[in-house]
Structure formats: structure tokens, C-alpha cells
Amino acid sequence: MSKPDAKAASRFSRADVIAAVIFLVLAAVPLAASMGTESYLLALVTRVMIFAIAALALDLLVGYGALVSFGHAAFVGLGAYAAGILASHGINEALIALPVALAVSMLFALATGIVCLRTRGVYFIMITLAFGQMAFFTASSLAPYGGDDGLTLRTRDTVAGLPLLAGDHSLYYVVFSCLLGAYALCRALIASRFGRVFRGARENPTRMATIGFEVFRYQLVAYVIAGGLAGLSGFLLANATDFVSPAYMSWQRSGELIIMVLLGGIGTLYGAIVGAAAFLLAEEWLSGLTEHWKMIFGPLLILVVLFARGGLVGVLMSRTRHD
Amino acid sequence: MSTSLLIVQTLNGLQLGVLLFLIAAGLTLVFGVMDFINLAHGVQYMLGAYLAVMFYGLTGSFLAALVLALLAALAFGLLLEFAVFRHLYDRDHLDQVIATFGVILFLNQGVKFVWGAAPLSLPMPELFSGSVVLMPGLLYPVWRLVIIASGFAVALLLYLLVSRTRVGMLVRAGATNAPMVSALGVDIRRLFMVVFGFGTMLAGFAGIMIAPILSVEPGMGDTILILAFVVIVIGGIGSIRGALLGALLIGLVDTLGRSFAVDLLRLFMAPSPARTVGPALASMLIYLLMAVVLYIRPTGLFPAKGRG
Image (cartoon, rainbow over all chains, first blue to last red):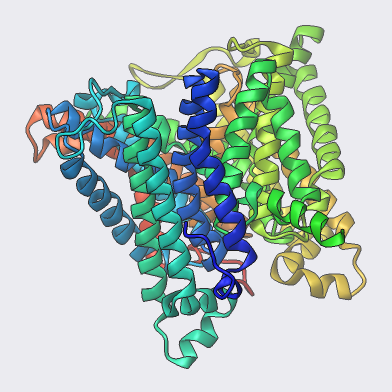
């Protein structure tokens, strides 16, 4: 991110400053990791950033459009399977695999979005869940590609023949750039005229329709973009873990993505990154403490919902505001 | 595709449908009256099964286990309502989804902590453990028929409760317009608690009844919860009638689909792709059905009046 100079400072909101801090920290992680010789840390943060891309896409829908998608993991899984299936046929070129992953997840978003966006509220939650389950069962029954057991990738994809995804450090920076790009895209989208119509539809779809906007189209475009970003996350996930499995699409995974968004702070974009980090780090830490870590994590989640409105970011913000 | 197989699978479908109804009835009432999404409804079903196993171990009698487990499930449900859920009624659906997801995580792990991860089983009551001859050469387990019968009995009881009693009238009124009912001087919180407790008991009952045929294990509530949501969305949220018809429809479609999908596909496909596509198609059949229903009727088949 470019450093804001004094004259332009007014154009940058607090959100941009927070996002800039987050990205600076993320960019510095490999340096810290190389000092501590902890490739473990690098892999963990890579994972955080991959899920942050998916959570970011979900925040676009949930936070700015009030479209609570409970099947978002399906797009991640589709992206991952596109990479996995191509790799199993010997196509290990990201310049082919990535566009295919994006196309598959975006087409799925387009087809399901046309149906889902006819419904509202709870029904929207449930129908997105239904499509998520359909994708899950389809993946489970793909016998030639591992079925329930999933699919192992023998090598990571190359980018234009270069092994950019192979090394831990270079993979880290590729994922980092993807997250930065995804954030910039969502940020620009929200600020644009398109974003204002989309946000208006969250507040009052009837009024937006009366003004003359076809709300459905705006929501569909946002849904397809969010699906594509989740597909990107899936493509990266497949390459980072060298593994693709139907579990990527399970409804629990969709639930976890929603938790990430809510945990960080809904409708802030950078909150999705904070939330993904908080969720995965808490999972990592607690599961190291005890095998029954979910008995701690579950109540923690309830406490966050009951007492920390606005998520972690919201809590930190209200603290600083009181000072 | 013989007739006897068709009969057996239809009965199995009915049995699944009845089971789904027991869970969906509570879910749709809680949802309809309180506008509360309770993802933790599935763990109540799991808990019913675990409690029955525990009380059976203590008493050695299925009937005693049934009664004690029902009471314990009710008590636990009310405890959860008091401790967590009641603070969520005024929140938006997203908060409810996340908080009740937290309850699922806790309880799924909790039963593992208390009873271990290995599947448990509940012996069938002696009296109903045999099979009956439905047709010459066609045996069917009595217990499954008992489940079907008890499910329809509960449906009848619910129908009478909801359409003939004062509480039922309030529940119907609450499902249509809760703030109005409250404004007319009804203690809506107490009504919520009654509805919630009743729904919890039904889910627990379903868990107890199915425990002799299924293995009792952590996470058994998750799959059934999703199915129950499909049922109430197809049936129309807040409608008991919708829940019953939706449950039977889903039970039959799912069971028959799984048994006959491959055979049906083979009518117009080569055998080997049919064997691959069949199971996949069968497991997504109900979700397809749900998508089609919602596409045609975005608020389900029997929406409670005043909604959507």
C-alpha cells in the first residue's frame, strides 16, 4: 500500500490505516519466521491468508448486502477441485488452472445465485446451504477423483513454468499478493457507484427498486464476484495443502467462514482478515492445549456473540474511542 | 425393482419422514413463534439418545429410560434456553446462527468427553424386537412400525394441541404476529419457554426412538438437523402441517431415491456411469427438490399466514 502523504491523508479513512497496518504485519511475517527458523509459522499464516480471502468475499455479501450465504465453502471447494482435477490429468500450470478454478466457481455462483437471490432472509440462508450440500455430495461421489477420501496433488502448480508456488516463502508472497488484490478489489467495489447501490439494497431493497435500480442484477454480480474470490482461495488452498477433499465444502466449513467474518467485525473487510486470523490461531492454540478444545471454543463463540458486538475489531475500536 | 422391495423402502421412507417430523415440528415452532434459528436443535436429538443409553444402563428398563431421558432432555433444554438462547431472541439471525453453532461445538465435544467417541447402542425393548410378516415372504421389523405409529400419534396430538387448546391458539397467534400477541397482554416469554421446552422434548423423543436402530455417536444430530431445516423450508416456516407433509415428502424421496436411483438411471444410461451418477444424484435429490420448491414458492409450500 502506498503511504498517504499529508495532502491526501484526508482521503484515507481509519479503515485504510488499519488495513495498511494489517498488511504491513503480514508482509513482515516471513522476516520474523526466517529469524526463528519456523516454517511452521509461515505455513500457518499462509493458511490464515487463504481463508481470509474467502472470508473477505463472504463479508462482501454478508456485511454489505445482508446476504447471509451458508454455502460459501462450496465455492472454495470448487476452486480447489478445479486445481486438483486438472493436476490429476497432468495440467500443473496455474495460468490454466487458475482461470478454470475462477470460471467454475463463478459459473456455479451465477447459476445458483439466480435461484437463491429470489428468496430473502432465512430462506436465503437455507437455500445457499442446500446448494452447498449439493456440491458437497457431488464431490463425495467423484469416485475417479478420490470420492470421500479426497485427492492428493503430487506437485504444486507452476506459474508460466516458474515454480512460484513450490517454495514456502514464494507461496507466502503469492498468497499475500492475492489477499492484497482481493482486498483492494472489494474496497474499490464498495466505494464505487455499484457498491452504493448494493449497500442501498441491504438497507431497503424496495426503495432501491423504486428509484429505478434492478436490485437483483447488482446482487447477482456481487454474488458472482464473491464466488470467484472464494474459488481463488480454494485454488490456493489446494496448492498450499497439496490436498483436496469434500470436507472443504462441508456446511461446518461454511459456518466457520461466517464465524470468521463475525468474529473480526462484520462489514469492515479488514475484519474478515482479523477474524480468519483469530479463528485459525485460536483453533491452533486451543487444540494444542487439549483434544477437547471445542468445549472451550464453543462457549467462547457464544460469549463473543453475546458481549462483543461488532466483533474483535469493534471491541478494540470502542476501547480506543473511550480513551 | 420388486414390489416387496418397494413396500419395504416406502415404509423405511415413512419411518425417516416421521423421525424428521418429530425434529422439524419443534424447529418450525421455535422458528415460527420466536423467529429464532436454533442450529442446536440437532444436538438435543443426539442428547436424547445418549441420555436414554445412560438411563437404560442405570435402570435396565427401556420404558424407565424413555421417561427419564425425556425429562432430562427437557430440563437440559430449558437450562440452555435460560442460559443462552433467551438472550438471542432479539438478535438478528446471524448472531443466532453463530451462537447456536457454538452450542453444537460444545455439546458434540461434550458427549465425547463424557461418554467417549466410540458409538454406543441402545437395546431394543424385548416386546418389539421381532419382525412381522407383512406379506408372504416379506418380513418387517416391529420397532420401525412402532416408530411410524408413535410419530403419527405425536402428529395427531400436536394437531389437537395447536388447533383445540388455548395454548395452541396463542402459539398460532404468535407465529402470525408475536408483537401483537404480546401487546394483548400475553406473557410472550413464558409462551416461548413452553414452546421451546416442548420442541426440545420432541427432538429428544426422536433421538430415543431411533437409538435402537442407529448407533449413538457424537455428531449424529448434525446431518439430521440439516434435513430438518430442508423440511421446514419446504413446508413453510411456522407451519406444523407443512412440517408433517414436508417431512414425509423428504423421507420418502430420500429413501426411495437412494434405493432406486441407479435402477432408474439404467433405463436410459449405460450401467457403469449410472452406478457413479446414481448415488450422487440420490444424495442431492432432496436439495434439488428444495431448490425447485423455493424457486416456485419462495416461502415454502404452506407458509404460516402473515409471513413472507
